[in-house]
Image (cartoon, rainbow, N blue to C red):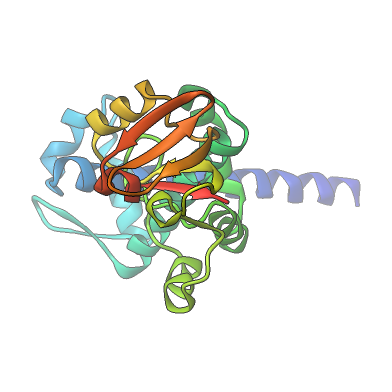
Length: 230
């Protein structure tokens, strides 16, 4: 019996390791398409130092990608799996930076573990708690989940954009919904970052918020990109 249990644990270990490797490489392919706009096979060794051509063949055999001589393309199965891994990773980054107040580089390793062990239902629960963020702390888009689509239909969410608040309301910044690094940097310099407590000083003719004793005028477009909890 003990021998059988050891064999079972060993088999489970190798299955989990294989699953993790598959997910990591699907995530890499997603990043390449997203960042470089390319699905050329010859492009992979340029982006990934230790790229092993056998990996692509293994992904093909598992039904995750289709291959031609020059290109790879996700199958529906592969796209769904890659999408979920990326979604889990980026939601984890938001959780660790926005709620636990970790720096982005500190959150990265935790997010890498999170993406492999947390089921989609829990990811959706965290996404709802965070107000269905659109981008990760790096400004990259977070793939939508079922919870996001349902929230759009019901218009019910825990968070709202800052421009919706009224004079005198207080809130805490959840995240900034922008892919612009320059805008993110500018807002951070002003003290507008996740976790910051704000108060709406006025909404007209200029939208002004108050952080501690400092008053900051904000453009409407920028204010709509700042998501807060009230």
